[in-house]
Length: 288
Ligand code: NDP
Figure 1 (cartoon, protein in one colour):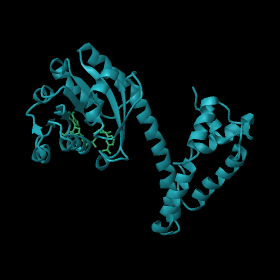
Figure 2 (cartoon, helix red, strand yellow):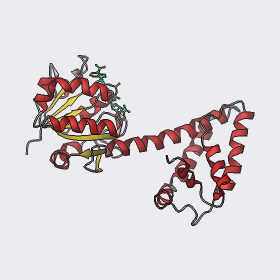
Figure 3 (tube, rainbow, N blue to C red):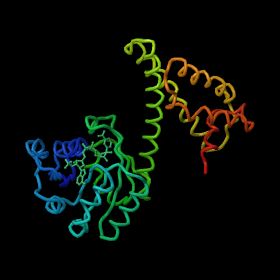
Figure 4 (tube, rainbow, N blue to C red):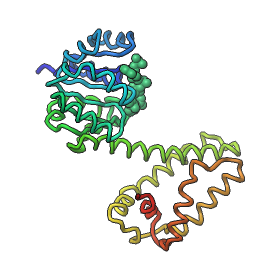
């Protein structure tokens, strides 16, 4: 059976990886990029390079867009709304839930089926077993093109509210940056005493990975609001210990700003009488 044609708009690092996965997966692939020249390696693989956005869009029922940001997507697609009518637009550009919902309203107003997406992989990971992508919006459009989208990584359709893929994406990135903040601080801290990175880095990776195993348990506590059952490391103890992290940074001549937010939150939660509970209870202080 012949495979459905796909158009990819945007040939940055990620768009190029996406287009490569489609073309090597046997889909007739049309590509476009604002700055000419980036299509050449893909053309060598068999992709068709379109001269303008309108030609690219009309080549396929499935149009995948992966540009820098929401503004660049709007700027690129607004002039070709009529050409997109009746097609499926899958927007894999990083954005907020509000931007995704705005795009979905715009698409609905022009008769375009809309699926928003989030890519949980780096470009070399596209098409590997580790890559996964989040999708939300039109379920029928997603189902129609799922065989093509599966080439990019494992697809997770998270709901028909078009903002939900971005919500999941931003939440996962928030977790990643929180982990990076702690890890970068840790590496800088041992660096103050010239501890060899090759010795310390595997310890850090293994410890953080072991601690991450608790995430489903924390998720349950946060979902139920029960921070008091089965506590093994109460927040009063953790809050007392946390001052040692800040004091050590200070005495090693390192700013603790990557960690700074946690200490006062833990201290407040203890002061409000929750010292015997789990540290997850600090999320109650985040709610506005
Ligand atoms: P790049 O910086 O490599 O590429 C950016 C792309 O956007 C280029 O094709 C660029 O075109 C295009 N672009 C920028 N501004 C405009 C504009 N005003 N009009 C038209 N085209 C424009 O970024 P990536 O490819 O890495 O990232 C693309 C998207 O994928 C981003 O939203 C990013 O957050 C997301 N993503 C990236 C990941 C990564 O690790 N790289 C991981 C997960 C998601 P030109 O060549 O003309 O400049």
